[in-house]
Amino acid sequence: MFTGIIEDIGKIVGINRTGGKWELKIATKLLNGGVREGDSVAIDGVCLTATKVENDMFHADASFETLKLTTLQHKKAGSRVNIERAISAGGRFGGHFVMGHIDGMGTIVNMKKEGDSIKLEVEIPPDASQYLVKKGSIAIDGISLTVNEQHGNIITVNIIPYTASKTTIVDRSLRDKVNIEADIIGKYILSFVNKDQRKGVDMNFLYEHGFAKGD
Image (cartoon, rainbow, N blue to C red):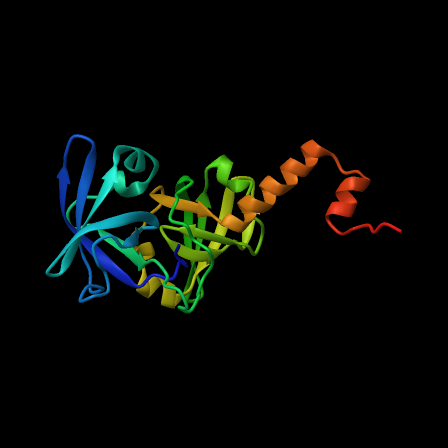
């Protein structure tokens, strides 16, 4: 699990395209014991496993299914990527619960400066929009952000200068694709509500959930 607080901007230094996967070679300053073989690492929000660590880079495999669903399919040698290691037990928790399981790719439909920040409008996949609420959380390319506005499938987020300086969001342009992960809490709530709608709200439901008490 991750928090959406980016730890480093890494660089893809090589891609080995094999029969059923891409092997990414990623340089990062988070080595020297910070990333070990078998560790989970989020690359632009995509949870991958470090399969090999050497010198100043680590290797990670992306399956064709992962490539199909994420912006990793567009990466090449020299591409900059957001990197976050999985949180450790007892570690400080920053942004929000991020699983590294991408819901789909969104499209940047508007970018403009507002003061010293950047206002970003993103069209997100319809399936992901149902989990979002105004002032709720969303991960875009692995970055924990707040949904300021939502109109259908279009959401608005604000990029403050600190976030812009510590992530690859400034590399993005109009119509670029970005990885989208909706807040896991919203998914659980919607699942709970849908199950209760199928079940029906009756006195048993009210007793079960503490809204009514027996004699």
